[in-house]
Structure formats: structure tokens, C-alpha cells
Length: 302
Image (cartoon, rainbow, N blue to C red; front, top):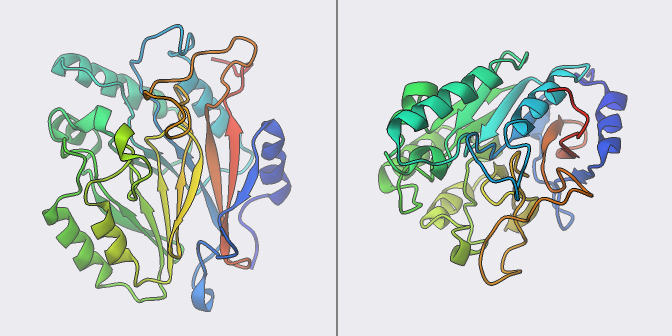
């Protein structure tokens, strides 16, 4: 089978300051490709762009990082099969008109991506104040599924409910969808909040996330990609691997490392530190995902 991404190009991106991380933690592959039903492919995960955020002490380039990320993705010699944004596309606001304007501006900026397929999902900043109503006007449904080259993707909405729950109706939907899958199906879950209790004191959890994990547990090959915590975190719940993404707007400290959750201030000596995005290379021959983390480039043209 021919690799559908130039491997040298992919690994070269790691030289931009990121690291290559194999998603099999503790010796357990995060994804196995049973029977060779899946094909190699790669996608880009971007998260927590918070378009509309203002705060020079946190990010004096708040109007530039998303645009830089778009240009970086477009500069890849080989295009990703698709792109996913795992929530908090915009910064929260009580003003519905401002919320609509921010979503319109965000959509215009990411419309410059030259990858044909882009999947969106909301974060609590986009959806919790109006249960996702404005988000749906611009981006469609908040939870859905799609299939790509033998992998079944499930997007779960754990933000439209202001309590930070998935909700019984959506859990029933998830149960019905999983009933159609074989136990050795290759499944990827995309969501905003972590499904497990990473640090509930900082809202880094999903109230009924354990119910979703219980529904996923019978399946042999499940990987979860999420956002919300503005940093890398790699965690296992049994055989299920969970990988969080960095933010495009501001980094956050490790869970519980300080009394109160607050963004890490901008460091002029290390601009854009802790911000970035990732490529995810699905490797059917090696039965795993390879994650490539790389940062926002200071000299990217805006």
C-alpha cells in the first residue's frame, strides 16, 4: 500500500519545535487496523482559536494566530485528507450580534484553507449560552458521524448543555450509532471537553462522560481527540487513548498546578510558546496513530 503523505515532509514538520508522539501509551496501540480495512491518511486538528479574544498580556497577536495557522496548514506540500476544529472557535460573549459577527469572521478566515473538507464542532464559548442555536446557524449540527478510509468518526457535543453534559438523548443516539459498528471497528471520537475526569475543579471533565466511555469500552480500537484544556495531555481509560490539543490563542497551566485556573501570560522572549496545532497520521501498517505537534511560527506571514 502506498503512503498518502510524503513521510519526509511529515517528519520535517517536527523540526518546527514540536515533538512526534506515538499514540500507543503504556505499550497499548491506540488504534489497530483489523483485517487491513483501513488505509493510511492524515488529518489536521486545530482547537480553541477563541476568535474575538482580547488581552495583550495573554496574547498581543490575538488577531493573528488563527490566520498564521491557516497559512501554515496551507503550506503543507501534501494536503491533509481533512481538517477538524475541536471547539471554542470563538470567544464567548453575551451579545448575540457580536457572537454572530465573530462566527462570521471566523468562517471567512478558515474559508481560506485550501483543504476541501473541514469538520467543526462547538466549544462552550460557542454554544453554552444559547444551547448551540447560533453555532448551528453557521456550522450545522453539533454532533454527527462520518466515515473516512475505514475509520468511523463520531463527533460528540458536550458543551451545548451549560452543565457540561452530553445528555441522555445524545447518549441514546451514540448507543444507536455504535450498535451498527463491529467490535473491531476503527473508531475515532472528536469532542471538546475531556470525556474523563481530568480535573473537574477547573471544568476539565464531562459530567456524564463516563457513560460515553462505557458505551465505547466494548470496542477494541477507539481513540479520542479533544480540546478545551489548551495543552497536550495523553491519557488512557483502559484501552481507550485520549489526546488533547494545544490552543491557537492561549496556553493553560497543567491541571492543579496553581490555585486558580488562568491563562499563562505572554512571554516576549518565547512568543507563541504553548500554542500550536497537530497533524495526525493514521498508519495502517503500524497499527497506530502518529501525532505531530508543532507551534505557531512567529515569522508566518499574516
